[in-house]
Length: 404
Image (cartoon, rainbow, N blue to C red; front, side, top):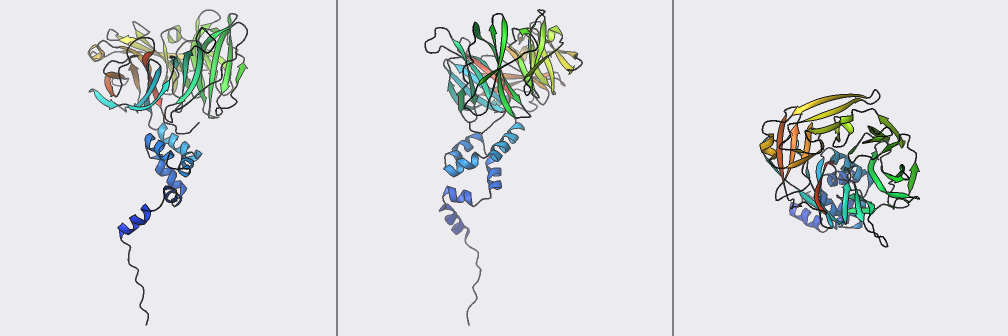
């Protein structure tokens, strides 16, 4: 009589030893791809960078569009502060979770280092759009004596960057007056809008980012004559807004539809768009912030600030509010000179200095509580005043792991 074979459970250590003999590729192939994507999407940024180096199969899985889209979607729910710190010929990127309802007591948050890029003289950095920033770098090109603006797209999450083609030179064209980094949420396309002065008038050119090859600038028509575009701009739901001087020498609010590439304008209260005003996204609406008495910056001597809100773009209707700073304002801010950086999803204005000392603070003003909170960020080396040094603070940055 044959004895029956008994199903004895394997020893867990035996299972672990067998699993340890599997290569990384074999282990990945035994897991359903949907589960692989879900697991990877929960990893921190630096872990994903290391996993890409394991093998070609792992790199391929992390390059799938469904994975990068899922990772970006999760990142959008957890926006970060991005710090671009320039010191001499380097631009150092650091990021930190964007505090949600920071306590009134002084908070302490660590800033995580991303990447360091070589730059000569950073003139401007755009807002962060889906993890990318556009940097205007002043460079003296080979064979030239005067500096020219060179536009560079950077992704601090992957450490990648690429230089955009030079803006075509037109006859009697002077240096580029202004460039804007914008995004069309419907077509999911990044674009760059550039303006340059030619014989007393401005010409407008657009470049659509489709990969990194065969990128070309296109001339577009502007139906709204304007001059001297302001340094402050904001892109909301596919529309770029910025202040400028109109043909009647008065300040106007210029609108550029990113998808159609058409211009329009909105009648604006002069105080809302003139020099010193900062344009922000307030609950999905365009708003303008100005400190009092000095509109260019806010300090311990400031007493209040005003906000103009565009309630109805079609009817050109605006509303205004005055916010008095709390009594503790002077003590909290001390001798700092601060600048408006934007408004968070939790309804707080963010202010920060342009340079850092041994300690770097970011300030949050709560509209509802009319309170001020100071948050210290560790890991920020001193970037003192002077040409070639400084700190750019960017709100609502998200991590995008899509490789260029």
